[in-house]
Length: 147
Image (cartoon, helix red, strand yellow):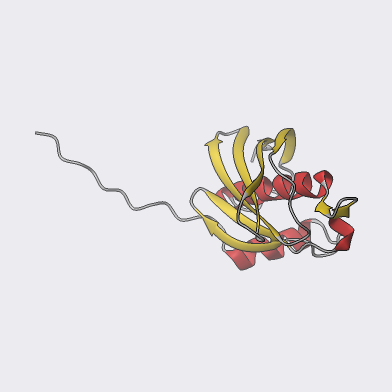
């Protein structure tokens, strides 16, 4: 008879504070835009504090702001798992805009779907904090440099 094996869930390589500091160090010229809310195995959750800068006509968060949030969430989800690798780069980003978000904060939950030696694939769901509806869904692929 086989018995079930129970494994402890692996811990992320970086904490919330370490990811936030990594982001600031990796992009020193950029204003602090994203707030790292959580890091978990296998991913991370970020919040975009929405301001008028992120808006577009019609009173909604712009597509480029949502795409940038999805990209950053994927990046930090990967880095949170493998450690600080500043030279990991986006090779592909596909996004589906599902509904028009109000001009309120948006959260991105990024889940690493595949983590290989050279490529990582991340699924990202973006939710408006106004009503918690999914406003966009993205799939992002990153190239990981050799160590």
